[in-house]
Each structure stands twice: as structure tokens, then as C-alpha cells.
Image 1 (cartoon, rainbow, N blue to C red):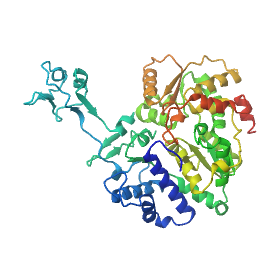
Image 2: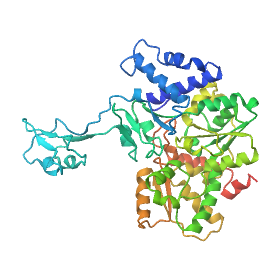
Image 3: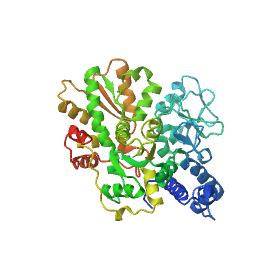
Image 4: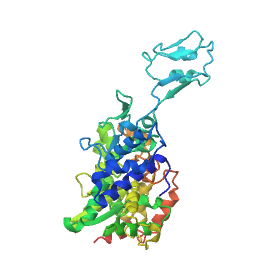
Length: 468
């Protein structure tokens, strides 16, 4: 079994793998009965109060692996039974309070929410507290702490609240489906809906459906599958049943060429490659929506190309992103798999990547491949202006994560941004920091650059011309 960062990831992987295997062997009807007992054999519980709750959580994970709540259009959903024991107290006074004479916390509170008990310890009146945090800043002993759930800390758009049972609740009107909460929840109570069953069924019944399967892989795949070479991963995907594996980076080459032309014409743009960044603008800063590039993302551009040449194509995008699942709806992309799901599928088919022959990717240029990291798009745009001899003073701002993107967008909305192009990425570091990577340690941009330098095409136009 692959080595993951957390036990939550490992459980998610095991469920996905078992569901895929059950679909392959036509035993999916017994999944809810058999899989929980296989993953949690007992008799002792490993993570929770008892094996019965552990198995109940696994059953809900099976539900997510089989597509989740169909009535809920949001890709990110809460597994309520798994949401457990996180403190929700807001600001609290700890035992470090010395009952000092200065009472700076009391004086700092604008709502008179702090009083002192008979032991001269500060107490916060929750009915009056507005959680402004001034008392915490004023306390000289750091005796006031702010208890906030990990999922809420991870969410940069305040889309997570608590329901009447203190379980996490996602506001779909605010959620940008970036998946930050999925990885940060220590109980694995938030997950993305999977499309793995759709992919298994399409590969298994390709002759009946008369549709040729194609895969498009995100350039961040270069930072994954450390136990095998990338050419072996590509070979493994063909063993799964994909006729051809294309690089989304080739779509990135095309996107950079088109986006540079649009920017030269309009004078100011925000990028359109990251669907969570695009959702953030549409949901939280709608006045800036008119500035989003009209060009499609590399994923969709590549899908359109495949569909043009093969109308019966069945196209699967593979990457680290949860929001790509929503973006793909209504486009040339049939389904989306994350890297976690691809690993589960490979193991469900019992494919040993280390034994696969190497089949290298050779579709894209260096510049398309470096889209996987922050700054990659802007570097590609510089090259695009040069290759097309466009006379434009390109001045980008590179935003790693929603927090930086929000700052740049706010400045632009007030005409205070000196740059003329916002490269926005929801994940810190770019796509290499996506929520559904196999591991989540710090990524070295040089790893992506090395992958880029292995490309045969040295210019974007050279890569794009291979399509003609």
C-alpha cells in the first residue's frame, strides 16, 4: 500500500480501492456489508469509540466513493457521523490567567463581555462576545486562546459553519470547492465526491459503449508516484485501458498563447486556469468577473481537441484538484479523477507500476509543464508575448493561495493594483499543493522545472503545431 501523510488518507484510499474492485468483480451490491468489515475487522477499535462507529464511518465513505449525495451539487461534502470532538468555544480564558490588576482584557473589550470571578480570573460572557479578538491581543500572559476548528481555519472564504449538532456545515453559495478543508480535517469528516465508479464502468464496458478512453494528466503529476517513474505511471494508465495519455500541459501551451493575445487587447486580466480562483471571483467579488480571461482552462482546451478528432472519445482528467470535478460538468471532459483516486484504481487493477515498461509523455513544452507551480503561468505568458511578437508591457502579480489572490483582487477593484495581470491559484504553491496529492509535504519548484526541461518542444508554438 502507498505511504500517505495521514491515516485519514490511507482509509480514504482503502475505501476507493475496495469500491473499484467490487465494481470490477460485479460485487458492488454487497459493498456496504463487506467492505466495512474488511477494513475494520475488529474486535478492537483503532480510531474511535468502538468498531461500530468506525464501520458506520466507512459506510459513509463508501457512499462518497460511489458519488455521494446526488441531490447536493457541491463536490465537497460533510460526513456528519465522522465530525467529532473539535472544540467550538471561540475565545476562551485559560488557566494561564493571573488575575492581574491592570485588567487590560476587560478594558479592550468593546462589548463589556469580560468580567472577573471570585478567584479574580477573567471570564468571557459568550452572550456578549462578538469574537473581535481584542482581549487576546491585550492579555500580557497570552492567557486567552481562540478555539477554531481546523476546517474553518483552512477555509479562506468562511464557507464552513456548524449545524445544530455541532457538525460542520458547508455553505455552497460561498464554497469554492478548493478542498483545503478536505485535507486539514483531522477526522476525515469532509471529503470530495468520487467519480471512480464511472471510470471503472467506462473502461470495463468500452466495447459495449463504443467509446475510446483517453486520459489527460495534469503537469503536477511529475511530483507524484515517487516509487515509480512517470513513464511507468503512463504505461500503467494504458494498462488500465486508456488508449492514449495526453498532457494538460499541451492545453496550457495553447492557453498561454491565447491569453497573451487577450491581455494585449484588453490591457488587464485575471487568469482562468484555476477553477477555485474563478469561483472565488464569481461568488465573492462579482464586480471583477468581467476581467476573468475568456479562454478555457488547459484541461478543457485539451479535451476539446481530443473530442474534435474523436467524437466518440471518453475523456478523463487526472490531477490533484477537487474543483476540477465541478468545472468539468458540461464540457468535453466526461469524468475527473484525483491522484488519490488514480492510485486506488491502479491498485484495484493489481497493476505493479514498477514492473511497467516506460512510455514517456512528450506532448507539451517546458512552459506548459511549469503551469503546475506558482509563477509558471506568468513565465509562459512572457514566452507567449515573445513567440507572437506582441508589443505589450506585461506586468503580472503571482498569487499563491486565496489569501494573496484576495488582496490582489481587492486592490484591482479599487484601481490600486499596479500590475496588469493576476495569476491566481487557490492552492499555495500552485497545483503541486493540491488537496488530493498523494503526499502534502513542501514541494520543490525545481522538480517541476526539471520535468519541464525534459520536454522535446522548446517553444509553445512547436508543441501546438504537433496537433495539426
